[in-house]
Image (cartoon, rainbow, N blue to C red; front, side):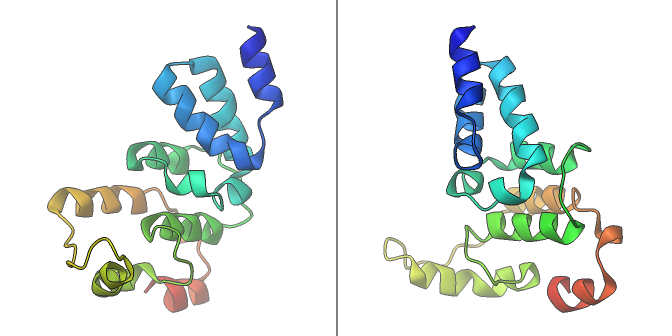
Length: 147
């Protein structure tokens, strides 16, 4: 339709993840697939947007596991996942997330209580990590940033 064609033309790095979410919720599969293809092709840029951080875990896992995902290195994929898991707080290591929870809660004026991950949340993180191809990470990166 003309609306789908117009939306495809308006698709940019900054609008992609938000349009993707809207299409998923509105049930517009043709445009959803176009957004997904764009996000996979421009993953490095799209993963740096605020809307990327709002993607739900199941769909993020779907994206990360998609063989069409284009990134210069697997380190980029891992860093995007860490950014998503930390809510956009760059420079934090995934292995230190459990130790950061009190600091994260203290930073949030709305909540002073420490959040402890439920078993379901831990399983969700595990499923997301399963999407990272750790064998493709450089050894020095693996030891310095991941472990």
